[in-house]
Image (tube, rainbow, N blue to C red; front, side, top):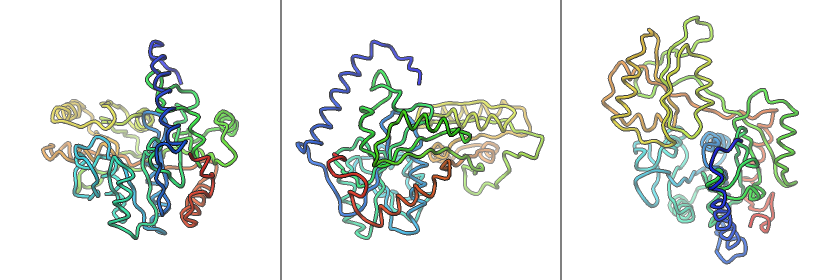
Amino acid sequence: MKNRRSILLYPLSLLYGAVTSIRNFLYSSGILHRHEFSIPVICVGNITVGGTGKTPHSEHIISILKERFDVALLSRGYKRKTRGFRFVLPEMGPEEVGDEPLQICRKFPEITVAVDADRVDGINRILKELPGTEVIILDDGFQHRRVLPGFTILLTDYSRLMIHDHLLPYGNLRESVLNMYKADVILITKCPEDISPIQRRIIAKEIDKAPYQSLYFTTLGYMDPVPVYHGIKTERVFSEVSDMKPSVVLVTGIASADPLKDYITRLSINVIHLNYPDHHRFTEKDLIRITDTFNTIESPLKFVITTEKDSVRLREFTNIAESLKTSFYFIPVGVKFLNDDKEGFENQIIDYVRKNKRDNKISKSQRL
């Protein structure tokens, strides 16, 4: 990964690294207490700032476990305006519980979704109020050292491998890449579907995983567009058999929009990309911009496309013109394991939960 940040930031990275190392040492040495729990806790996280695909991978893990176990997911509810512990309900808004937890709650109504910045308190509240819970998925919890998870999954983006990065603020790492050895599973995400065996071997050699760790490669799969607004008749947006391609206004507020933009570009005649920061809170001014951009397109076949996460926030607007509302779609994202790794990964997750052990792969001393 090319880093265009000023070399003047490098000394600050050294200071940041020293602070995070001291913090990790205090937990590893037992000076600061870590909490274990009586049920399996699966941590899904990364050490890189920016999108590595945590939400679709958490959803994939939910889909693996929900038919077999009573599942709960705990998130901090990033950028919500509330504080403390809350159970997430479908009728809530993103400002109350965060966009990603709300997305997961609406997609998987049969599981429990909760938010709490204090993960120890959050887990205890779930277990107290829902004692039948059998497994908790800890979303984006790799840096939350107060919780000692039983199973940890670490994600790194194929195009921004953590081993080629640097600590903040010079790079994008939240902590030293050496801490990747605390994970049970390392996932190389957002890979090209046609990644060659030799490319996989090169990456595996660079990652240099420990014997107790598993390494898998995944890619994101884009599904058919879905109307953002309920009650809107579904129209075929992209067709591989039709000669007529649509024009698209692509609206994104995610960390890494390039893969989606590339996908949309292949299926469209024209793409206008309105790109916003990750977890952007859309305003009336943004809506006017989207509407004006859509109206300037003269093509008879045109749509506004956004991500599923962004659709959670955009759906809050009720004053959208009917012509725009009926043309507003989001694209769901799924996870695909490459090289027939899907069964191995799923069996590893299910076996861990069934055994209900915290040391089935890594000894307690290694986790600390």
